[in-house]
Length: 362
Ligand code: 5GP
Image (cartoon, helix red, strand yellow):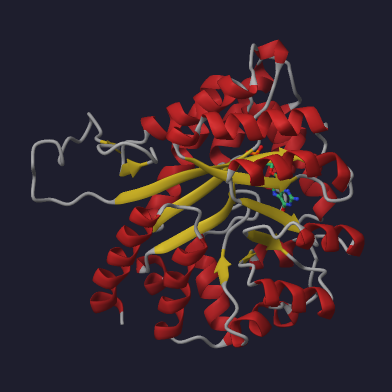
């Protein structure tokens, strides 16, 4: 496990609100409990429950959003989530979140994203590179200005990029608003669009105009694809050739053939898939098949808070289940560089990070 922690890792599928620490959720719930907004005891029980079905997870997200959706809290959770990933030696994090409108809190999708960006700026345990344009974009912390005074002590660094999620509950207009916002925030680390939310809700035709618009604007797309056996939708998703897909639990042979032919990288969330009962045994997971076929895959956490996991743990799980040795694990981690939505300069920097780590780790 320690070796998996040491390994530099790339996280491509992490939802902000699903990655919040339990301790923070409990603290926020206690606060709202004291204000009489919620019944703390009931909520605490739900937060601490282990093992949830997919529909239960979506109910829980509504509770999470009740606890986290004000500007100050969004900033706090973003900061904490990035620090937690950095502590696991995640060197590149593509964090996704759904921009939310909440009139009662004076929140627009844009002000929500500003709160997220403030959270990235507030990180102080590690240097953060998050602005995609410009030259000097490292957030040099005031609290520990080691880099600023030219100290030889090298601080940890994490690249953070953002994906804006369209929630399947949204209308076409709301989805288009998210795509346009992503475009406006390209200089603040936004690199693409995600489609997520409860897979049994919403029609593909509702999101299609926004996803097509994203394509026209040159924004890469990743889709939650095949979380339920809706083969008409899976086909339609593959028809637009997304740059990546996530989960892909219910794809059938013909659909896998297309994914392989189109060389679409797959984000694999082992713990999430097992905990939500998508596979009865981890040994039945399609990871082994894709890995053997040398198809591009990336191990990811999905919702590290909700599923009590870490990316190190996901690597350990893959290694111990599918019998990968250290060389194979290292190459697996490193190969995710190709699937990031980062620009070539960042990909080059990541390659250097792995080259440096190779001497130490294998
Ligand atoms: P947020 O976008 O609010 O930061 O993160 C939580 C949201 O991510 C959830 O409300 C849901 O829309 C989406 N999400 C998190 N985990 C999953 C998952 O496993 N499947 C799908 N389809 N959506 C998810």
